[in-house]
Length: 69
Image (cartoon, rainbow, N blue to C red; front, top):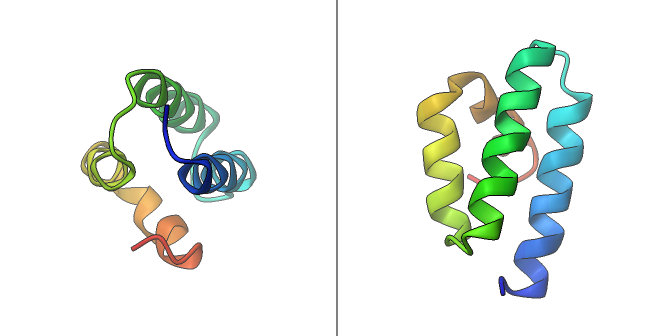
């Protein structure tokens, strides 16, 4: 299981994605699906962030705003 602190970060990230005005609904849905998939696979949080940035460059400002990068 991921560490509790990582779980809190993931929940903040998911909320930020849901509330983003920079992403389309499809991008939000895809990003959230990737987060759930990676969470279930118990991937490292940093690896998740890197992979999401590669797939959705629009998320980089969201991550920066949350202090994740």
